[in-house]
Image 1 (cartoon, rainbow, N blue to C red):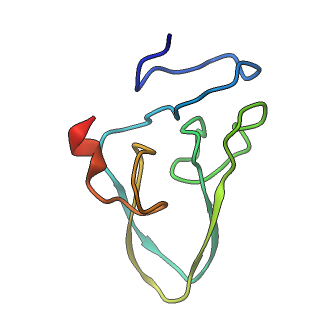
Image 2 (cartoon, rainbow, N blue to C red; image 1 turned 135 degrees about the horizontal axis):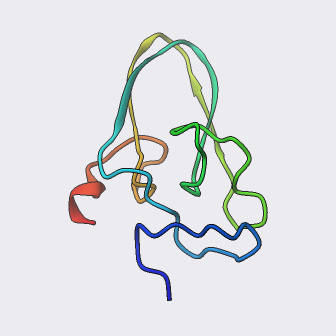
Image 3 (cartoon, helix red, strand yellow; image 1 turned 45 degrees about the vertical axis):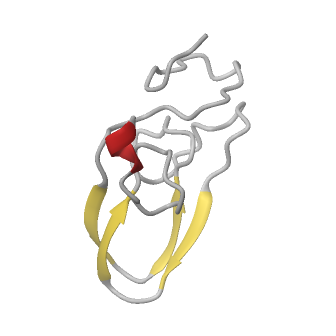
Length: 92
């Protein structure tokens, strides 16, 4: 049984819980546009998808940012308001 935060290195084994790349948000200035947030936690381009979810039940989440602003992207992958950090990482 996998514990939270462990890395499932075999892309062909389904995951029921996402990997946890870090237990703090990724805060960055973000320009208007469409972004694909990584939901599986495997992407090496966190917080964005690089296709590493293939073979799992996870799918990236498309998010449209309409104006330039600073965004706190969830990096623990357990937020209740994806793709944005809601502080859930403090309880993991």
